[in-house]
Image (cartoon, rainbow, N blue to C red; front, side, top):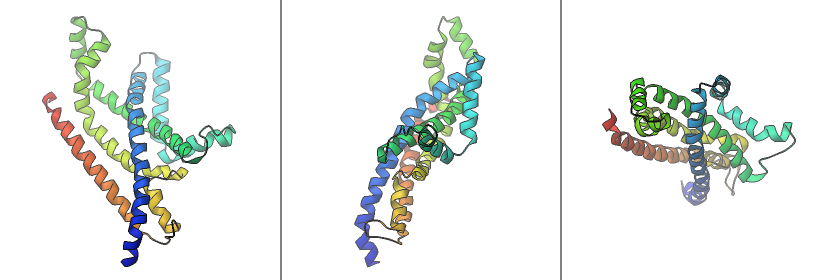
Length: 228
């Protein structure tokens, strides 16, 4: 126990650095995936068949393959196949590649949630808006958007919470997120080796982060209760 107490400051400092990387990847993914998912959603619902089929094909590929494989392809493909390592080297390059892979992956999942939310709104609201002289974009943003948000919030919340945990997959390309930092003490890091207990501490970070997100998303859902 005394050894663990001595090692604790070193481990916590390393885990904090790794967790900051996890949080960065989480927020960058959400900032990129939310709008991109809406664009893909509009593409899949487009009346222009080539665009619709292309978007549906991309969504099918992304949803049908593991995120881990997508990470490996995004990071290694340019360098191994094109002989052009566009991401550069070092932690910043790995973070950029991971961000691109996560944004594309989650945008495709969000697009399907958006599509379900939009199609769940009664068609009569579109017809009423058109009768009143509103454009389709005005109908979407002024009439349907908040109703859609209310309906898609539960599945979106699940995806957001899953994203927190999925960030751990980025260690496959050696991004130094929190689990990478905890696992490093098993192999040997900063004079500590063969220590498995730091991995259990990483679970606490995830539990706290997901607990806060659950409270925040629950409060947001209550605020939208007037759309029931």
